[in-house]
Each structure stands twice: as structure tokens, then as C-alpha cells.
Length: 242
Image 1 (cartoon, rainbow, N blue to C red):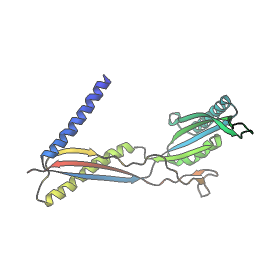
Image 2: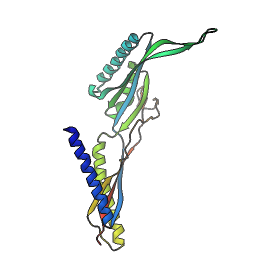
Image 3: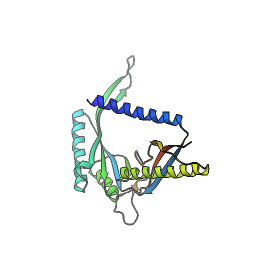
Image 4: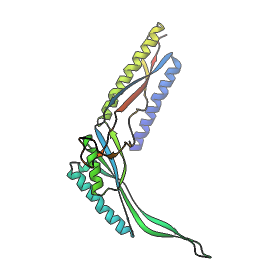
């Protein structure tokens, strides 16, 4: 049932696209890309922290790593982070291998010296002002690896939707100015094609240092995220009456 519905959806999308292309080929038209953007300070941070443990056996490494990771998670929850905002992103357990020098007349061999367990967590922090202190707390509680910090605007999806509508209006205003300069007028809309939104993504790696400035707690990691820019672009095609 799902495959049938999905196939029908793809077929419908293809037919709509094909119909729009055919209509553009058949009538005079104009295509204009509108855009809209805004900048705002992020209000949410995601910390990417890890706990790495190396011990002689796999059991020891995984067991101790689990204990340390749980300790970090418990401490974050005690500081007000909701449990649902703490996730395990990756967990690995790998042997640490060294190469023994070959003896005379014999080939060298690889020897497993220990095992390394690594647990990476993502922690969503709101309000953003708590990010530095929570990052330091995580280190104090046992996290020994910091992958980075990602900053975001929490209602990004709603903002981008508003920007897409503004981009359509911008495209219409541009199109009207073009055709009216030629003594023409816009016809009906043939196609609306949103382009990929430009929004902050991935990890940001801000300058992180032990804060010495006024107003910061001793040992607190100081994070200063800059404003983030959201942008939407939409291409709209209108027919031009003959």
C-alpha cells in the first residue's frame, strides 16, 4: 500500500512538472527569482561532547565508559537539561593495535594493546546563555572530548516559511516592474519552484577559552555566537498574455 501511494505521488509530481514545462514551451512567459532574508541571534545551542575510555580489555573499556557517560548525563540533568534533550549520537568500541618490530628473520606482527570505547552525546541547551557553564560542567563530570557547538534559532522552520512567502512577493514585485516597463502585464502563475533554503547548518566551532572577563564564573567556558542569517529563494514563472 505504501509503495503504491508513494509511486502515485511521484507520478503526480512528474506530471505536474511535465505539464508546467509543456505550458512554458507553449506560451510566452517570464521567470523571476525572489528572495528574502533576516538575521537574528541564536537562542539555542547543541553541545557535541564525548567520553573516551581506553582499558586493557573490551569489557573494562565499555563498562567504565558507560559509567562515566551516565555520570555526565546525570550531572547535566541536575543542572536543568531535560533528559529528552540528551542523545547518544555514536558509540564505538575498537581495538588499539600496535606494530611489533620484526625479529631477525621473522615478519612483524600486529598486537592488540587495549580497547577504546567512545560515546558521543549531543545536548540541546536552552537558554543559550547556559551553554558555556554546562560545557564546563560536562568536562568536570568526565567528558574528555569536545567535538563542537552548533547554534540555531529554535523556530527556524516557521521563520523560513515566512521568508518563502516574502520571497514570492519579492519575485512578483520584480516581475511586474520588468513587464510593465515593456507595456505588458503578468498572466497566471505557471510554476512556483522553491530553491534550497540557506540556513545555518552543521557545526560551528567558536573560539572557546576559559573566561577571564567580568560577569563570567571562574572556569566557565565562554561562548560568543554571532548572528545567524536565514534566507529563502523562490523562482516563480508567469505567462505573458499575447
